[in-house]
Length: 134
Image (tube, rainbow, N blue to C red):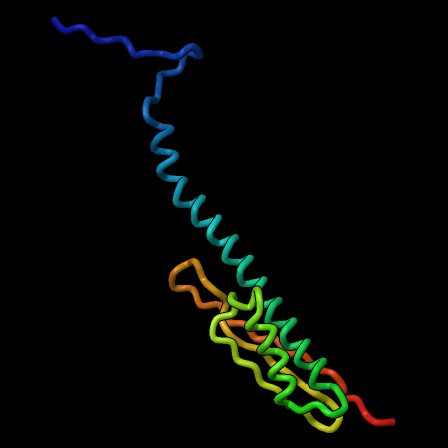
């Protein structure tokens, strides 16, 4: 003769689901880590983009001086990129064009990545009118 064992019930009258919390954690943990890495990566990209934008603006400001050259504009932008915070822009490239009325500086590169197989290009430009002798 066989006897059936009764189901174990918790205080709420439901059958216990032993180990279900561990399975939920194992399934959700990679998703939570991916979301956190995505948020941090977005922050790094935004910061590197701002650094590149500020470098282009600084280069345009220096290049707009009355006796400045395009090389002066490039040097000012590179100085800012080589300083603190500029290490987040990988392989930065600075170009400048100075005409008779306007100076244009472009900063480009890639944001530092912590997520594998992600390439985040950056390109920021700034233009200012060239100072004239009056």
